[in-house]
Image (tube, rainbow, N blue to C red; front, side, top):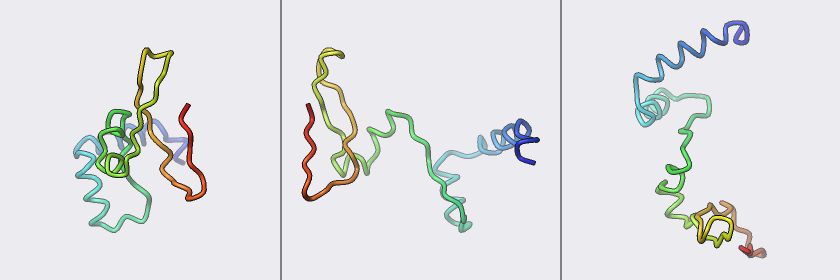
Length: 88
């Protein structure tokens, strides 16, 4: 039924979801005990500004001759004790 009524479903969900901010929806789902996974989908800029990303030191700078100097990228979020990644 979802596929059959996909356009209508998307239109309705879009209309309802626009009534609150992402943070407000997260609070609603948390307080109502949502049994499904939920979370914000961040833009690239939001990922680099994220408090947890900053706290974990996941933003790294890398020299890129193709981009005229240093660029920022995200480090792998998992650290292995016997493996040290090399950034070339």
